[in-house]
Amino acid sequence: PKASSGTVNPGCYKGLTINGPGVVVRAGLYIIQNGDLNLSNVTASGVTFYIDGANKGTFGGINGSTLTAPITGISGTCTSTGGCNGMLIWDTETNAGKPQQGIDFGPGSSTLTGILYFPFAPLKFHGNNTTTLNADIVAQAYVFDGTVTLNDYVLSPGQSPLLMTPTLLE
Image (cartoon, rainbow, N blue to C red; front, side, top):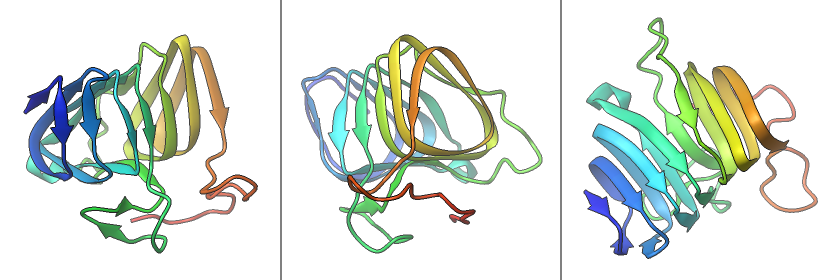
């Protein structure tokens, strides 16, 4: 579906495109299969986007959006209405041995708060209008282009960074 107004609820989608500040994106787990995830000018809190590569889900892009991962629940747990604690965008591991061509975040003006998990993809963050990442990033490689601010991800103010020591997330 494509949404430019109304409400989008957590669930399993065959691709998902949300464009515009007039869309309410409810907290929870969004599973993307058989298509791209594209978010433009979206503000959402308590969301996890799971890109199911085994079922042809792909990451399209994020631009001009403010997204925050869920900060409730037990670490490592996922629920449909609560998302996955700490995880903002999770690309599956089905591309092991077949590196993706690369994933672009940009051209900027986004604020992403949470864990970005892309173990087999090189990431490029464009900061033409300032991108802020309050994030821990697990990726094959990453490039920062333009004005990008990178802060450690913490579940709540005053805590230590979440991935301060090596951690396996699966």
